[in-house]
Amino acid sequence: MKARLPDGYGKQNVNALMQQAQEMQDQMQQKQQLLKEEETKASAGGGMVELTLRGDYTVTAVRIKPELADPEEIEMLEDMVGAAFNEGVRLVNEKSEKEMEAISGAFPGLANLGL
Image (cartoon, rainbow, N blue to C red; front, side):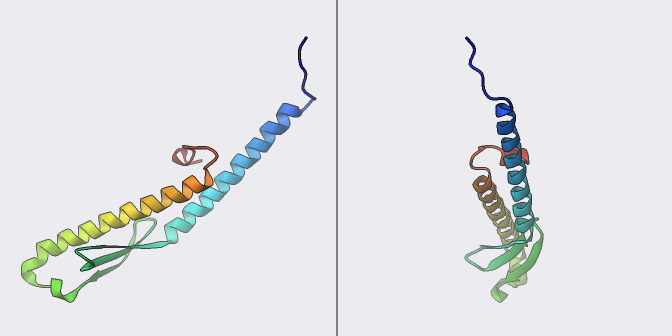
């Protein structure tokens, strides 16, 4: 004897799942846009160099303490600016991952697929 489900039963579940996936995708796209516009600050050298960048990795501000402007310290200054930028990129990526995981928590790995 075969068990029978009511007509349309499986289709309703699939449709509900597809709708939920579409809503999740819409939420993720909205969050990605917000993250692109959000600013993150990062610093290096104990706060001697500070960068502000947006989620699209655009640097919007660079602040360098005046005592670092010594011409003999240019190489160190350049290294600190690079370190501050790299830290900013890491923080933006970390924040983005957390936000996408919060949305796609029911479907682990989905954020990495761009869905």
